[in-house]
Image (cartoon, rainbow, N blue to C red; front, side, top):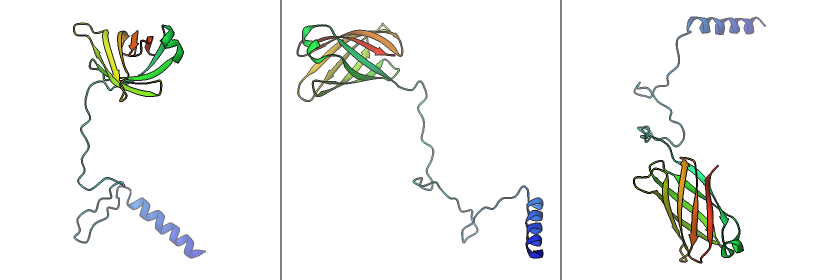
Length: 154
């Protein structure tokens, strides 16, 4: 029991006498030895993070406007607003993935056009108007004649 008490006292005294010290591992040559997180190689530097607004992903909901569109029903897709007048558009239509871009019309911060295309040749064209960076509406026409009203954002 006396040995346990003496050990506890020795540890307590060493903790009190060395409050501002820390242990730094060293290599065989005495130089500091740094431990890197897994997957980070020695000498790695922090990546440059782009400044400015970050892209915003918006939901695109398309509602049928004619009989051809009614056969397929409501559609959903995404628009990634790059916050620079450009965006990326992705939509599934009748089993095909249409991919394209959206661009604001010059001299008009709110109006824009979007186009998308699939590998099998289906395409769509849209005209839209943004009420803010995260919300807008417009019309889309598909290569098979289907017409939809599109709502962007929340």
